Amino acid sequence: MTSWKVCYRSKDLECVDKYATLELAVEATYSLLDLGYEVVSIGTWPFTSMIPAEEILRNYGPLRRRGA
Image (tube, rainbow, N blue to C red; front, side, top):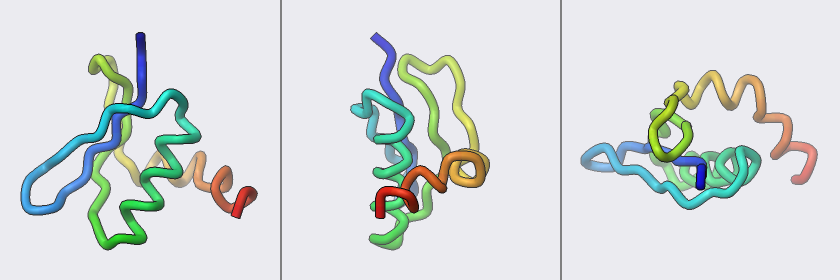
């Protein structure tokens, strides 16, 4: 089953891969950014593609703003 993965940098590159939808991954990305982490990429698990987080937020960021 495919899930969404968010990779961020704390001391090392870490990834969380438990999001069922892209919308949930975007929400998690904003939460990590709010906590001061650098979010590097968002993609699917197993790795079929990883997209720079900046690109995802540019295209899907308004999803969070609508719900806020």
